Length: 144
Image 1 (cartoon, one colour):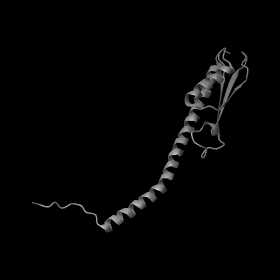
Image 2 (cartoon, rainbow, N blue to C red):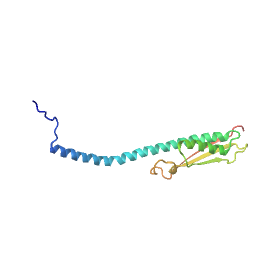
Image 3 (tube, rainbow, N blue to C red):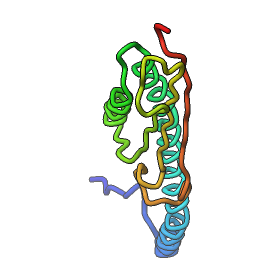
């Protein structure tokens, strides 16, 4: 009858090395994880700012288009901005339409949108604290 010999034996010297190496891995992990998390949050925050910037560009154009057509009002422009921003979760913004009351003889319409990044961020402010994004578009009225 054959006696089975284990193929792999860990000696006490080897087990001490494994335990020491395990401690080094924990320390390396503790040093690297905060850096990786900060980079991940920064990437998400920068992507959010780019998305907000492009959304403002689109909203200022769409709002101005509604305001320049015959019968268009400043309220139509504000409502369109509200509709577009509600889709992506922008809650704090300011829309200015110049002139505030659109008459038939108003030759141009200017729409300004200002969005503070502090109140439209996913994470506590680290990168864009106190910053705002502003866009403005002036278009000639149709039908003049």
